[in-house]
Image 1 (tube, rainbow, N blue to C red):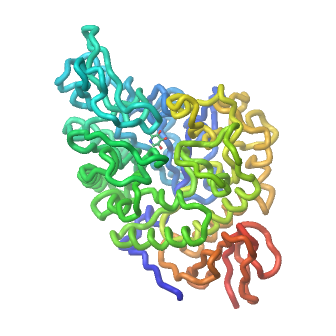
Image 2: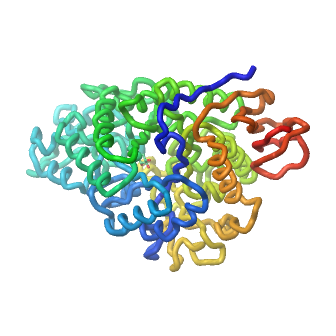
Image 3: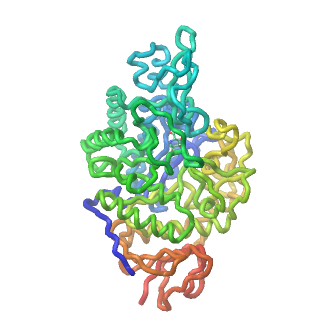
Length: 553
Ligand code: NOJ
């Protein structure tokens, strides 16, 4: 039976309905030609994003960093790494984006800094118990001589979560906590000095005119008091998506920080927004991040992690609208980002692939490319009809698959090294974009350099090839974004419809949306007029792995 899903929409702020395009600066466009993308490269390609039809861009970190975790290891929160340009390049990029009506969100990494951050260097030189050490989480070790780590926690990237330092006098010393790489020490967020520093960092970027922040590891900043031992559930997602009561994920203390930041943003004009990266086991918990006085958005990872299964997909959409609606926030929708296997590959996986595992030359049962692309296009066709804000990841508009054959010697993800090559990690979704089929590095730059090798077959996915093809994935994305805008699908409500057990179906006003996730065609009404379809089909039967928007007479 049809059921009305209301999404509470108390305001009309832009972020409630925006389509936000994630730029991974290393791999978007490289103006300097050194093989790593940069800010002038982004500026030079903004017209392509305007043409695509997105409302905003989110930039993964470009701040000063030794790049041990691709920029998620920040050494100076108030400057641009020379790899990516200068602050002046940032200001120019921001001005040019705004001139095109595109808002800009930057990545903030508050859970940890780089070990090269001046505070961490000061902490290493200072004594145990000093104010310098108190900005991070230093503890004495266990065992007779402190030779054992303070607890048994395991790093997200593999190995232990603690590293022992050598004290300034040369003796083996205290241990510091790092949820991620050993070069990423965690801040102690119970320390007011840390809190004050980040208020100031927020203001630094707000004063420059950014429209908001994507907050890295928003669920990890506060640890349970006493740092009790914890053994993760076997095969759980390392970011915490599948586990309850983890002493370093989802602790209630984080909410005070976001209430505080909410007030900082509210001092500024123009609806600045916070979007949290919080991997939590349930949507109910995820919605706590976006209560009215906290963050504005949070990524919908339960939706991202849902397999290609009609029942599961329908359930997660329903639950998302209910749980986010209950706190007055829009749901967000996301299928790909720089940490997961690209969705036009992932949706055809037959085996489990927990977040961060990746796919490489020796992965058994590699997904079929054509099936993956069909499902990827269908999934996006469905997603862009949903009420709320949607995130796209660079390259998905070209239908890029995961790069599955990267030779070992090129790999850079710390996961690959910290797990002794057991997990491939995330390099396969981070390969530089193909812009022009016939150019060196497919037009990523004009020197041919590329920090990760681009697969030769990506010539077929190059933007200039897809521009001229009305059946291309790029053309589909442009049509979807234009139609979504025209119909106002970013806000409002949906009415569920029944198209059989293997389909997800709903109505937005007089537009019907159906995705076929089954193994047989799904019949459409005889008077259906197709507005948009994820791939061409004839007649009134919707093929498998296909989605459609249609009206009836
Ligand atoms: C989440 C980011 O998305 C990921 O790329 C990074 O490695 C970790 N946080 C650590 O900052």
